[in-house]
Image (cartoon, rainbow, N blue to C red; front, side, top):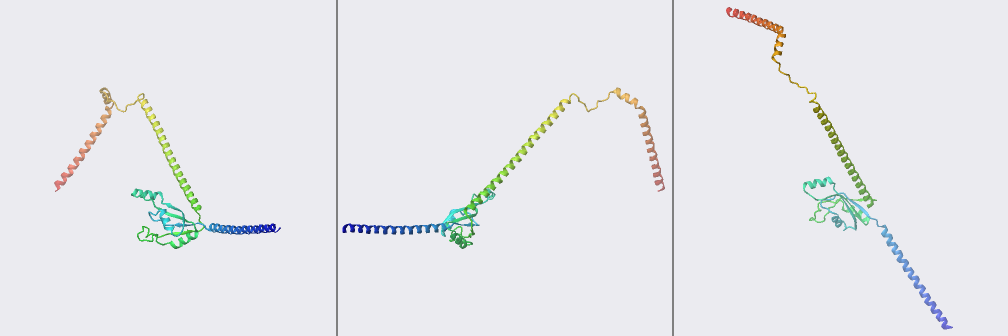
Length: 266
C-alpha cells in the first residue's frame, strides 16, 4: 500500500511539476506576444513624411540627393520634375544636352525626421565641403503636412492627362487646317478647269463667227465718188480758209501802220 501510495504521490509530484512548467511557459509566451504586439504598434505609429525641394541646381541628380539626405534618416522615394520641353529645345539649339530639374519631392520613412530635416537644412548650403560642386547652392526645403505620395502620383497623372488633351487639340486643329487647305486646293482646281473649258469653247466658236477689226483700203473708184459727192463741202472749206487769210492780212497791215507811225514819230 505504501509503495502504491508513494507511487501515487510521486505521480502527483510529477504532475504538479508538469503543470507548473506549462503555466510558466504560457506566461513567457504571453509576454512575448505582448512585446510583439507593442513592437508592431510602434511600427504602425511610424508614418512617412514628404518634403518639397523648391530649388534644384544644375547637374543635381536623385542619387546626389539620396546621398546627402540619407545621413539624417532613411530616405524612401524621390521624384524630380524635369524642365519644360521648350527650355530643353533652346538648350539643344545652343549646343548643350544637359537635362536639369526644376523641383522635387523626397519621402522619409519617418515624418519626424522629415520635419527635422526641413527645419534644420532650410537655407543651409548643400555641400559641407568647399570642393563640393553644390557648396554655393542653398537648400530650399519645406515639409508638406498631410501630404502623401498618392497625392503626388494623382497630380502627375492629371498633368499627364492635361498634356495629352492639349496634344490632341493641337493635332485636331492641325488636321482641320490641312483639310481646309486641301479643300481649297481642290476648289481652285475645279474653278481653273471650268475657266479652261470656257476659254476653249470660245476659241472653238471664234472661227465660225470671226469678225476682223481692220479697215480695208479704198479703191480709186470709191475715192472719185467721194470727191464728187463732197465737192460742195470742199468749196465751203476753201471759202472759210480764204476769209481767214484775208483777216490775217488785214491784221498784219494794221500792225504795220502802227509801227510806221511809232517809228516816224520818233
